[in-house]
Image (cartoon, rainbow over all chains, first blue to last red; front, side, top):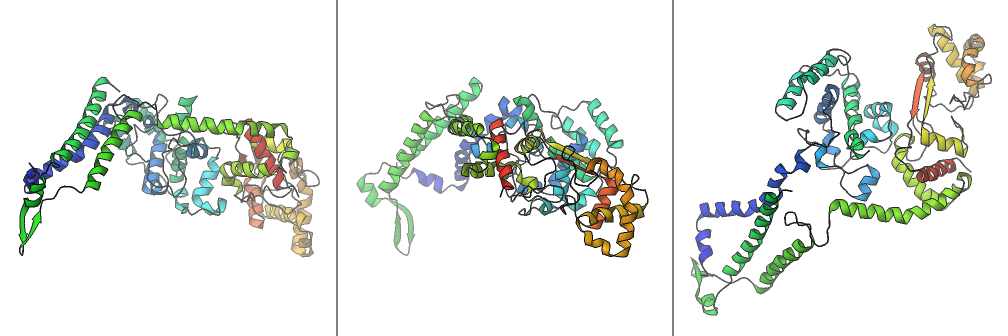
Length: 211
Length: 300
């Protein structure tokens, strides 16, 4: 009886299989069911897909690594909701590919930044020179964004990929409308315009849902 | 959560616990003789590795963790749809805490609401509570020391764009303000020289000694008659108009920069400053305390 474990210890293949079985329990119970839960697979009713300008801003956000210092995930803790706003729910991030929850707060959480009483002008000045407005800030400045025009060459493809592969409900007409704006009023938009539009869009769906 | 997933989770969790217990006890049973004679068969330089049972203290700890899991699963959510006897949830805990704090602070804010802002600003609690509200809501633009930044007014001096009375401050915070100066280049003469003349004139209002230089004096003389178009908002005496948010030009306080180039830019392109309304993010009682705090910043 006592030496049964010797069988496992002397069969490396069997041991690998049993280890995999053992460590899969947690994932099977905690992760796998989430793929079939409405709370995590269905968007909240007020969620709307990003406009082309916001999508371009999101790309800038990712490219500049904003998510390295800023989270987009307000936890249901009073100290956080008091400071940042309403806590984040899974249904807000169903169309996020990739999600930008982040994992470290060097700067404040930004998931509700669009609801804060901050003017567009402030966002622009702050991106160009954070310390001109907040002397204690250690955020890097992004002055080149105001001069860089958005590279629109891949936007039609981006929107189509989000529509076809990620299940974001853009209709073909939506994409046409967005591309008409891209070729029209947004043709000369700067990356700063795009990033600010993206920042101001954060949190809007959750506010509308709460109302 | 559907029946299937609930059962699925319960099955895995229970199987996991039972499996752990089985592994533990299956490897536990050893007679004292086995303990003495049983070896793993490994031998190094005549030293044999024996197959010993688990140390007791370690074994008891393992059993304890199993018991802990069972107690946990009875009290807290973990078994599928069963929410646990305590009915705990993270959002529920958050709500409880929010309600508790609200209950603690409501009488305090109620008390504050009865005190006029002109008196409330001197309360030490106002410094405390108002200071925190300020740090979270106002410091972004006006700075953590409330001394402002270029384009964002200093709140610690006695120079007020829209008035420094308690009511005016409360209105500024609650409803926001939108200060606008239109581009004035054409109105002051149109040429670069005319803009420079006017900028020098405006600058000399708070620095009269500038006119000791003959060129400046000449510029000022040229600009002075044209100041009438500015006076519409800033007043004949250039001391501003708080009903319009037009700044006093004679006090040497420059919201958008004191350099000649800054003033020229202001005249040429105009300025637009927006204080956003805070009605939607702060309750009336909190606005009251915050207004008292801001009022107190410039009181001696």
